[in-house]
Image (cartoon, rainbow, N blue to C red; front, side, top):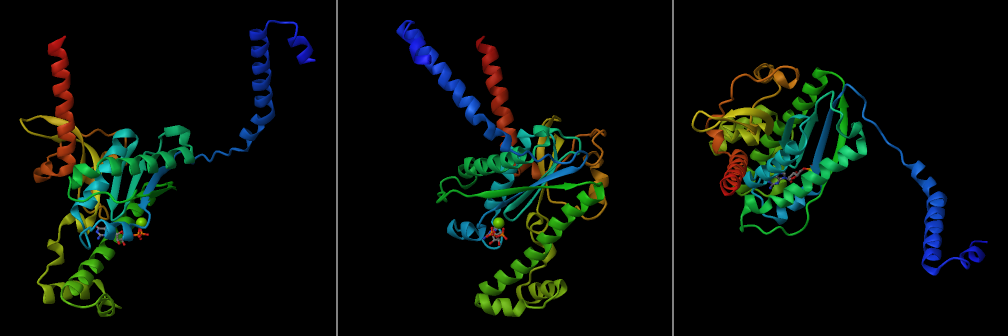
Length: 314
Ligand SMILES: Nc1nc2c(ncn2[C@@H]2O[C@H](COP(=O)(O)OP(=O)(O)O)[C@@H](O)[C@H]2O)c(=O)[nH]1
Ligand SMILES: [Mg+2]
């Protein structure tokens, strides 16, 4: 019937009718597949932790010649990518990173993406990965070319109580302690001439105290004097921070503090109680020179300069 009707109207108009009827048919016929989509909503009133983890980073670190067991540049690059994620999401109250993983804690009442799991998890993984690649040159300069694209997975876990959240962060921080103490002992044994298998045998069944003792007696290393970033991982907090000339800036600062004890939570009470405000700017001492902080100050200065130039030229 359409064809006989169309013959009676001008050609251009007939084409329009045909296109319209086809697109309408396509919509009505195929659109039902949309109803197969399922959306998983993250339970309200819970802390949301999104954790990213590098895929096959054992190989990735080897291929790019990362120092063993800890590479300052690699760890800082992870933290720089995490700063990018925190700058994108205001609802992140704290992030914590170690080795090839980073955890982002979204506040309980966050309604980010209506708490849709797929959206949030995929966005964080994608932004973290692209920021890691984007900042590669800033950290490695021209010294290490990126040989293939790194990949990070992500998951979301919900914690209903403040204690659960604290225990989660304590769990990740205890993991650094166990792994780093082992790795420090292992790589020192290897550097002293043992094969990997011999070093492994030597450490089998040892307690923390044995590894501390071994490091001290054989390598003159006091484990407690190893860099805090290696022993504790990196905590990122948004803080009003004291900078030069009695000024303060809102920055994402790296801290290498213990989160297992109460002191950390007493020092930063606004983390668990969002209604509290930070009163005085935080003095981060020598960490003001840390690459993460300098990156943000440089960016701030560039923006201020740009605005000044724009203002002068108008
Ligand atoms: N050399 C070196 N390797 C690292 C560093 N940080 C993480 N890695 C590697 O990344 C791995 C991360 O562990 P895991 O996620 O369990 O292993 P994956 O499955 O290979 O990603 C570690 O076992 C190390 O081999 C670093 O700073 N230096
Ligand atoms: Mg991994």
